[in-house]
Image (cartoon, rainbow, N blue to C red; front, side):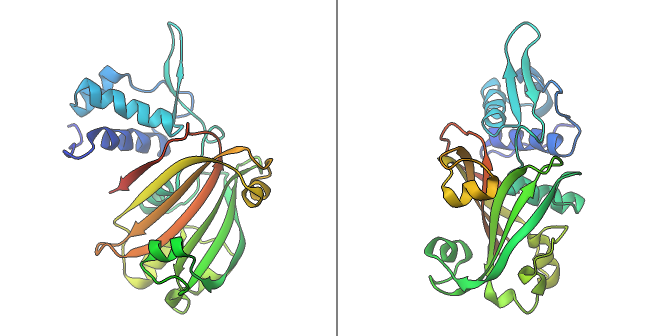
Length: 250
């Protein structure tokens, strides 16, 4: 039975179903992805919807096209792309693991500070209100930096979720940790993604030259009431053709 396709943004919903197949390992690196016609039949959608879904996955780095008679779209490896923050949240919720096997993160800094305007807006606070920050660098199995990120939380969580201020990994992810201790469940979110040149701070964390292209993202994770649980920013090496977009998470 085909998954139910909602009326809003069907191409992004189809892309999300296929992306889940990739992140869960049912479609492996190097596998040939379903053709547009196969996507049409599997999800019972029009050609234009299936075509756009494939284009979304190409833009996000999950599929790469190869020309020629034996060509098509092929699944990329973890070395070729990095999971977005939204994908990490989705996978961790379903599997209890925040990173693929062999990858790991180092917590580089934590603390409490006044919220910058953007962070305050993301968390529904006033600029300057106290917030917890938690910075990390993610590494591949080959010990290469693959992403630099920072998560932000209201400072009111410091007592109920003290591990947010410790430089130790929270294996299931910060959002899952907060949700468990507060009784709130991550039920959705939004992500903004764009391309930029790495500034000196990002370049130092990723061990790349300043000005190198990176994919930047911001993510809002919310509970059933629509209240923010976490606001985050991340940077990964690579190109995204200057795309800016938003992706709703179910």
